[in-house]
Amino acid sequence: MSQEFLLSVEEFGLGLLLIGETSMLRAWLETHGIEWKENVVRERFSAAAHSLVARNLARLGRAGSLILDESLGQTLQDAAHPDYSLSFARVMEGKEERWVFHVKEDRIVLQHVHRGAGYRLERMSFSLEVLHAKAAAFFRISPSFAVHECGELPLEEFERLSEATDLPASLRRELLEDREAEVFRGSLARIDYTEHGPVSDYGCLALGGPQRTWLFRLLPVERRIRICPSSPEGLREELLLLMERRYR
Image (tube, rainbow, N blue to C red; front, top):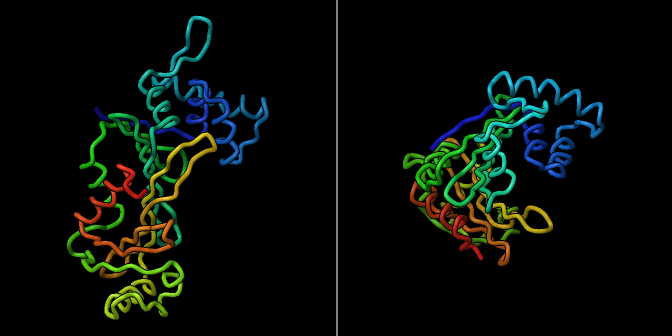
């Protein structure tokens, strides 16, 4: 099972409205700087409605009501109410890219910004292999860029790496070199949804240097950072820790 939808911001918002997610829609519009006024929303959504109908992603009912395509509606429902989400974020050359995998039972919805405007939604069967392959490509995890050594240090030393005393000298030197000449930095995090909103306390930081990629596991309770193997096998272990909530 794999389905893909490309939606503008307005089409995504109209989709939320059609599946009854009014409160979520208000927050969504606010993040995109769209004022919550009836005339503004009507104008924005009118064009979106015509576009969805033209692309067979919605149809007009007998009473003139707009009915969303069933597959798109289910995809939006899964994205709006996942069991949990995995966020891949990366900043490279000053530009941020974020992929969010919304996990719902035996399926996943991948959501990310498409070409700077609008969203790409891809609904697929749940698969660790697919998640692993996409994460490896996203964070440049491969044997040729792997760090195999491990280490652990307090958060304070991680922030002042040149003063870190808990790391072997060679590991600290390589990490300092890559941090000064970084290609990208990013994060891999689990997002849980509570009655108070989304919570993301556990995850992994990533740093890409010219010759190596680093993975740093966050240990918030201990206030420490663990340098983990950044091989494909090491990445798989980090994904499993997040998926199975074994950080806690």
